[in-house]
Structures are given as C-alpha cells and as structure tokens.
Length: 320
Ligand code: NAP
Image 1 (cartoon, rainbow, N blue to C red):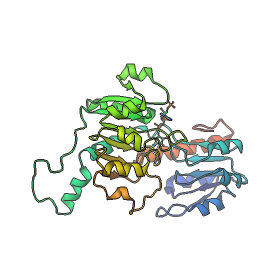
Image 2 (cartoon, helix red, strand yellow):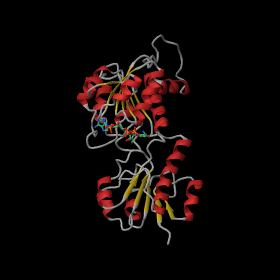
Image 3 (cartoon, rainbow, N blue to C red):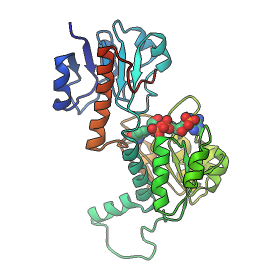
C-alpha cells in the first residue's frame, strides 16, 4: 500500500508525476482557486503526508482529526499557518523551505523599496492610462534610496541578504533582532538598535521577522508615530506583523511618507481594503519567493523531506 500524499494546491505535472511511483497522490485540481478550509478538513483525515501552502490553516483542532498523518511539508519558509506545537505533541513532523528563497525574497524586498520610493506604480499607470500630459519639476518626485538609512527588523537570512544589497546603494544599515549579531556588525558594518531607536532613525524600515505571538501587531500606532514623516515602511514578512488599521491612519495623516507590502492579514486581499485607496501605498500579491528557479527549489526541498521520511532517515528541513 502506497502512502496517501495529499497536495493542497495545483503543482506542475513534472513535479507531481514522479511522486506517483511511491505515493498515492491526490491533489487539488486547479490554480484559479485555493483549496477551501472545508476540503482541508476532509482530506486531512485520509492523508499520510500533507503538502501544504501558507494559505492552509492547520490548527490543533484540525490536526486532532487526522488519523494517519505523519508528515506535513510546507511550501514556504514561514510556518505560522501550522500549529507546530500541536503537531509535535501528536508526533507529526513539519518541514519548511529555508535558504533557497533567501536571495529571491531579498530581491523583492529591495524592489519594493525602490518602487515605493520612486512611485513607480503611479508613474507606470500614468503612461498606460494616457495621463502623461506634461513635465513638472516635482511631478511624481519620490525619495532617494541610495545614501539613505535602512532599518531592518528581523536580521535573519533574508534580512542579511537585503542588507548586502543596501551596501551597494551606499546605505547605512541599522538592524533590530531578537539576539544581536556581533559578527555581522563587525564584518559588514551593520549597527544594532533597540526597536524604538531604529524606527526613529531609519528612512526605510523593512520588516523581516517570522509571524509569532511576539511579532503579531509589532508595528502599530505608537511605532508608526516614532517613524519620520519622510520614511517608508516595507513589509515582506507576514500580514499582521504590521497593524493594517494603524498603517492606514499613518499613511492618510502623513505620519509616514509611504508603505509597500507583499503580505496582508487576509490573502488574497479584498479590493475594498481601505489601504488600496491610498496612492502612497504599494501592494503586491505575496510574490516574495516567486521566481521559477526558486519555486522549483522549494518544491524539491519539500520532496527531499518526503524521501527522508519514506526511507526512515532523519528528516531534513524539519521544524518539529
Ligand atoms: P530567519 O532566518 O529565521 O530570520 C528571522 C529573524 O527574525 C531572525 O534573525 C530572528 O531572530 C528574528 N526575530 C524573530 N522574532 C523576533 C522578534 N520578536 N523581534 C526581533 N527579531 C525577531 O527567517 P528568514 O528566512 O529570513 O525569513 C523571515 C520571514 O520572512 C519568514 O518567517 C517568512 O514569514 C517571511 N517570508 C516572506 C516571503 C514572502 O513571500 N513575502 C518569502 C520568504 C519569507 P533570532 O536570530 O533570534 O532567531
């Protein structure tokens, strides 16, 4: 009997086909709509292995209904969508995809800094919509990225990769992290700051922590008010680390100059979301790791974990 492998999204044929030699593969059939939670509740009862995406909310209650589940492979480095403590207690291994998406996500974070600072979305829309009718001295004028001060909250793999990019733009790099990183400070000249000081001093604040009970709502009204009114906030981590209501008020009231985000509390975000009415807000649809090469490597990493499990070897890329 082959183990039942349930894939909760539609993956490329060339990835899925080889899995059929060792697994009874069952998969969500379409890319247009994500698997609804009710379907997840149904399939978790029959899966031996579950291949999830961050959209799938795998709670303790859900895990308790699983009958044969032994392994969950999450197609992301973040795993805040899974109750890993519950999984551990229930003897279910959980794996993720750290490392392979670091550089790609850092590229996206830097892109978001540039397009937000230089008002690229507004500018491109103007040309496309036929609204480019004049040249004005301050028309679509943005802010310089080069030479500015970058504050990174969460100096992990992606944070460090972003900081390396910033050096090429002659930026000063400040960071705030759970633990200090003296080696990075010495090797690259990054400076540690307490959170409040980082917010006060930075021209660009980029959030790159995982979503945890400690980081949920980390950036709210008070923190946004500490930032310069010329500064730009970027969130490439997870929706909910930045409080969306507070961000809306800060942007609307000119407490900060602009913001760019790749992530929302509720994804896909509703087109009626108040933030989307603001010109100084740039939104992307959670594409941090979305390059063809990186996505392939992420899938391969998850498959490595599955093979380890099948062969009874220590499971690589294991979170719990
Ligand atoms: P990582 O290497 O684990 O880095 C996370 C860093 O955040 C660590 O240095 C950690 O500190 C720090 N941290 C954790 N809690 C903190 C807190 N309360 N206060 C301050 N710092 C804290 O992870 P990564 O690979 O860089 O990824 C970071 C996050 O980015 C992921 O968890 C994921 O949610 C998000 N992400 C998003 C996308 C996207 O598509 N938008 C793509 C990839 C990743 P320690 O050194 O003490 O552990």
